[in-house]
Image 1 (cartoon, helix red, strand yellow):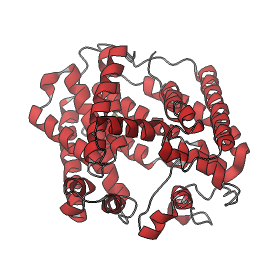
Image 2 (cartoon, helix red, strand yellow):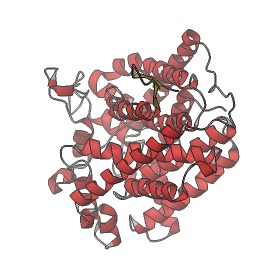
Image 3 (cartoon, rainbow, N blue to C red):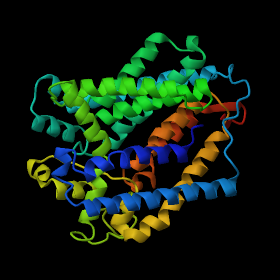
Image 4 (cartoon, one colour):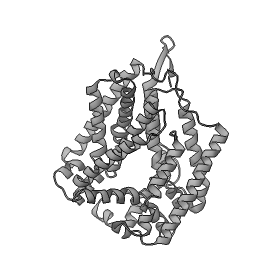
Length: 417
């Protein structure tokens, strides 16, 4: 199988929304069974996910019909294609800038207020949850900028460095390489958000597959990924979450990974429209307040409905669900079935554009980043992708890194892709 955005998103939906279904349905997970009590409602969620996924596939097929079949990266001189020196210099500078943003963020939060430090100091679960809230949802204005540079951009730079070293190991300083990778890992785990680190491992695996195997997914890479991700998660659950031993941590991994990502959509069906009427679009972004509505904080309100004790204790929790959950909350079943084919078509169109680029380390990193980014359609609200701030800024950084002055007299600029 050659990697593509539509197939990777559909595969992600299968992993996160189907594999754990029998566990929830037959109440084999005691913790989740306290919240998921109506099997008929769970079955309805499974049915809607199935129909919406079929419609996503239909949209991708329509894209193939209208735009022609996907053709993989242009691979001329694939073994000798390296980035220009001016691009590598800019990669160094942007990476150091992102590192600086991470340092400023840590200084603003306070070293002892970092959730990872709280864990290492033996803090209780409530203190750790409050620290995580203060580091993210309750940080205040400007958090999205910190988050972008110290996470998304730093991860993108890290993936680019990995792609360069896979093709030309001598092109990048080992000290700089280790420094940036270590900073990226720290930024991902310091709030004890285990899924972010797993996403990074996924992205690294994808860069390897794209750079060394021309996009064909080998079984050996899948096995390596499973081994390393499970090892990391076991360590995280023992030391971050307080699980007693390896067996307990493995059970927690399956609970969180297979059923924890499926549970939210059950609550969306439970909450709408019984306890909250349809929202008719007010969960969508309202940039600059140009539209006459105040955005409804969907994921926070659903979390407050499911676990009101979080709100009472001052913790700002969120409960994102698969992309169609927000469509359902706004427009009911009709919204899910109308918009799902457009999701598939959009994914195909983005992939069609990416594959028209020339194969080089930065394009490989960009594609791997996008695969992980859009994988989150299987886990989070679709409004995150309507005005896609992270993607817009990543593409802006990508263009800045690749801009080249081709004529010093008239200052003409081009972006080499």
